[in-house]
Image 1 (tube, one colour):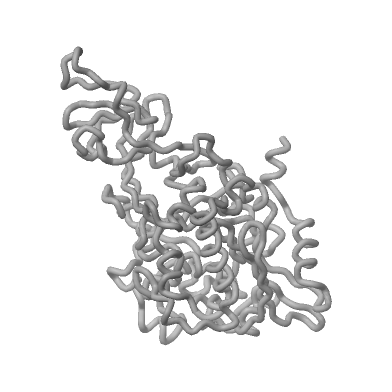
Image 2 (cartoon, helix red, strand yellow):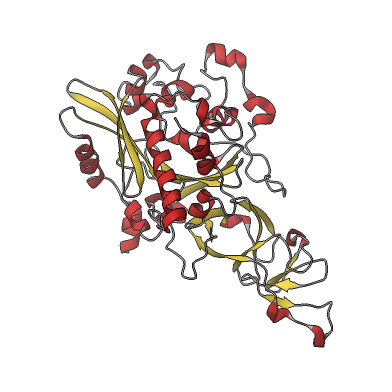
Amino acid sequence: MTSQSENELLTRVGPGTPMGKLMRQFWLPACLSSELTADGDPLRLMLLGERLIAFRDSAGRIGVLDHRCPHRCASLFFGRNEEGGLRCVYHGWKFDTAGNCLDMPNLPADQDFQHKVKAKSYQVSERGGVVYVYMGEREVVPPLPAIEATLCREEETNISCVMRECNWLQALEGDLDTSHFSFLHTGKVELDDIDPDHLERFQLIDRAPRYHVKTTDWGTMYAAYRPAQPGHLYYRFAHFAFPFWTLFPNGPLTDNILTQAWVPMDDTHVMSFQFNWKHKTPVLSRDKTGEPLPLLARTTETLPNTTDWFGRWRPVANPDNDYLIDREAQRTISYTGIGGVFPQDSAVTVSMGEISDRTLEHLAPSDRMIVMTRRRLIDAARALRDHGTIPPLVDDPDISYAIRSGDLIAPEAQPWLEAYEQTLQRARHPALLQAAE
């Protein structure tokens, strides 16, 4: 059982908290590049409990500043983004993307002290359609994430954001819980409805898999397994990579190039950044006649973005409307009556409370991956706090490049890690090909 003190350590991410300090060792996906235009509107960002303002200046450079002007603490959200900087509307003080004060027009020239004033700013990097922010204290920043799906060409990758209104960890743990797929998402799908050659049919034949779980250099991994054809097993592999990345089984291991980042906005809101290679094998979404399976959409409709701190990428189906649950559909065609995989996951994880009380849990053997991942996070946060030990992947993110999630069938006698490695060697690696060009 996770104790109350452990739960506090795991879930609190604000400044000065152990998990917040761990998160600040890494580059964080902050927003999509498309959300910022040169001399365009400033963007409110909530990251790790801090209220920030992002803007793109006249030359295309991006700044991420504390939202409070260092003069009188008025919010820079109302600033004028013009001529190479963001100008506070209160007294006209202007700041560049690094937070340097460029102008103090309300002061006589002999009283100007702009060289002594700087807005709090964070280092920024932009890659593949995503803006990353480093909120740590290093002068020499660590490398950017190197998970395969984040390195593919922007034009070959679908990148989407969706906000969820709960703590980051319970959202992330949903990706590490593979047995829920056969209930929450496909509980009403019958085996006879599925193409008899579709690899994912074994999840409907046996809805209670067994597990292999292990710690890794990047975090943790599991293989859920079930009987397949005689003498063979059907495997679903997945990974957790520090500090908040998941790679979940969503198609064959040979081309399931995806990852998801669960970036904490604060203790009770999290932004999902999902990277999907466009050429991966389609997942189970249609029956054997080609008709869509009921309420199993893999894309998530979002509301128009607003300018408030939690107004970006909010799903249409959300807690305010009970995720648009259709009780008649639940009785007849769907296990949940909720349309779409992400809203189904959201309904159950948000229903746990803004921060789940893990002292009330009764964990089972199917939760071994979750238990091991919590332990890895707790140990890493304590090691950083108590001994200054740098967490995994901060300085060597390339370790995570070669990992892949997905499913496969292997002989029953073959060791599970051997089956994984052999399949990975035969897999497609478009990001590797891109780097070689």
